[in-house]
Image 1 (cartoon, rainbow, N blue to C red):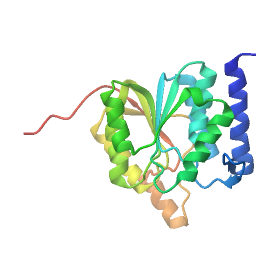
Image 2 (cartoon, helix red, strand yellow):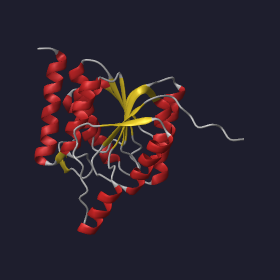
Image 3 (cartoon, rainbow, N blue to C red):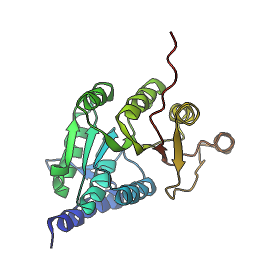
Image 4 (spheres, rainbow, N blue to C red):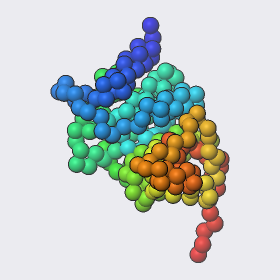
Length: 234
């Protein structure tokens, strides 16, 4: 049995444990309730997409308890090629970082992963300056509009033409506004990754508003078509 097969099988067990028990494991063995993670439907879509596209470099903004991290690493490991860089400062949340890195270690995939323990607005420029080029970027960091927009703007500079940028929590107003900017002012095409639209909200009125606006809560994926930039204004 190859190392890749062994690691992939081990990782799947860790992920299944998370979704089955809704807990993650601290390095001291304590089980902690999951309070920050992508849902299982989005995780399955993420796994399929990375498996199919085989990015040499994937980057995620926002790591939390490491569920999206494990999902992406699972696909990379099965592909037999690629690596993942995660950017998350874990400000005021050291337990989250310990748990996420422990999950990756338990899965046996730390060799495919690098964690930048800093904010995305410093980590992304450093990757750009170093000459890195990503083929897939998953945005799930700070959800305030200015942070989401900054993540998108810098991710666009890091992303190869033909690469894909995905947004978690796409139904949030802040994220939805950035997606609308991307669609209107940059050359991207939206991809169908098999996720049905979902407009569920806290009541029927808000669900209707989301449906009218097209604010589906499921992840959305966009392929970069070229390096077009707006004209500079003096």
